[in-house]
Length: 538
Image 1 (spheres, rainbow, N blue to C red):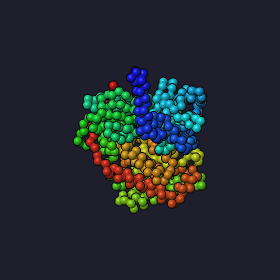
Image 2 (cartoon, rainbow, N blue to C red):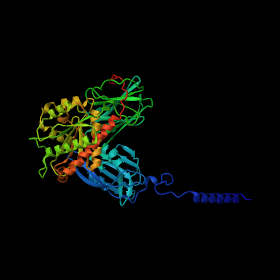
Image 3 (cartoon, one colour):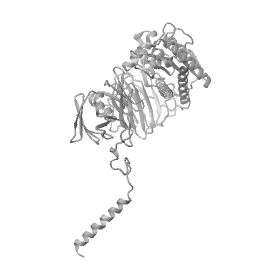
Image 4 (tube, helix red, strand yellow):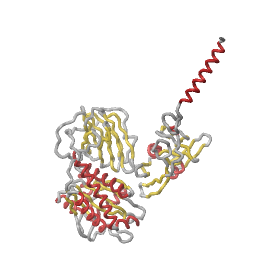
């Protein structure tokens, strides 16, 4: 048989085999990451608009925009380029021939192409985890582009809270500024450097990972990071959220425990990673130190307290009316009514002893309220208040724990609530002493449990957990929080807060969170804490 015939026959056999293989390959469903080679850029054409809130940090102004979860198989939020340009006060140029968009923000050009993850920035090329998508006549940009690229490179704080569907914008004033690591024999000390004292909570979401949630923190993600190993620290990174920063540490498998405490000048959060467990449990942890085992879900030893007595503090009273709503609802009356309902609920649903700092319309200065809580042997202190603002747009529920106020909003609320007495000059001194005390982690945890539970139960606007130097919390030697139950300056919230039925619902929601917190700390087993290590500068 001629060679040419052999070649032709071979080609025919190859073609037949290919056709057979094609017939037996299952058809790829659009978006299937295993069988669909274009899955990473598939648009969900049925994705509808979702309402997002844009909050301007400097003025507390809020407005609504539309976003979409546009990528098949992904939960990433997308905004169209027109919306991004408007929100960031930028401009855009579309090159139709190259399917390329140039977005100019703060005088800097960012270039991206349709269905590509590559973004050309003034700092170099960056590969996004998900692509820019072309849809409905515009390019749609992933939220990751705003928070991790546009924000850091334009010195603008851009933080996305996916749970609250809230985008927070504000000029960057970094207060979590750096990371220093040093070896201490068989231990490793990680210093998170801050520009001011900040409240924090350390936890371990999974083995080998430590997360430090820093309340009011605005993190310089470029500086608070480490890719090279040192000692027991494998790597470190950070990310920004709407009202807090998160620093994540990847640690060696040898790490069995760690300790966290505040540095002597208040401007460092120090985590000491330890190889071995120590069996002894020392006396109460001094100066804000805390410890958590690396097993997920375990809490520090300072949280292991049985809740037996709850002190409820209805804010204001007597000649101090507090906030006044547009229809004449007085804050002092709402606070007392909710406190009474909450007392009844807790006594009915549990064996807790519940003490009110006031049970009638009378004035008590702030120091007396905290002292009363101490004399009652309180295990928890909850101060009840209503909020107010200069316009009727602000609304929602927020929870505070004690620490120097960090944001302009927290400072304004602090000033209003501190007006009932005390020398203003000593607030920062007294607050700083308490920032380091053994209840800071417990207070922040109580605040988180209460904030999440009430918001979910009543469907309220979530204004988050915040920190401020409320004098009513100063001197209360127990986990202590202050809740702002709503805005009397908001017409709908004023109407609700003045209704007895809503007051009962609010009290029930608050009560459920207090009982949840009590069960949480009761189930926590104290973990071993190693002796303090000396931390030297490099």
